[in-house]
View 1 (cartoon, rainbow, N blue to C red):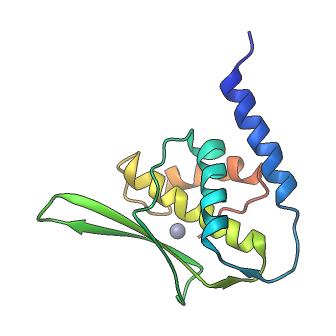
View 2 (tube, rainbow, N blue to C red; view 1 turned 180 degrees about the vertical axis):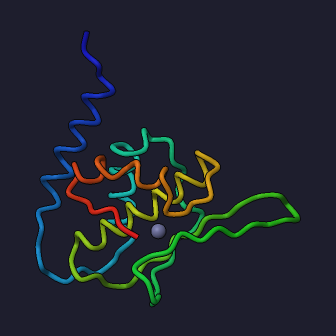
Length: 137
Ligand SMILES: [Zn+2]
């Protein structure tokens, strides 16, 4: 029997690897790529379970990326904001950051986890490696 779901994931994986040849060219962050690679990573890494970030901001920040949870105690809801830098050293640097922050989103929204760099977080290490991504702190 053919496992179609798995085939689709493998297809996306191949397409992703083809589109992300390492380059040393500076990368300029844009919403089009964020949307595109969010959907790739969601399919390949998170079984399409992730909901979009509630908001995405491209701005100067001191780290490479942030996944910020805003909690409304009044409403009892959480609001997740992704913050990315306007430019990155290269495209892989951008992709490493996006996938990293998506993993935090997954921890917090799907697994109800703390979203820290814990065992659950690093359990994705080999999955990331297959996409040539480096999972770090
Ligand atoms: Zn992190």
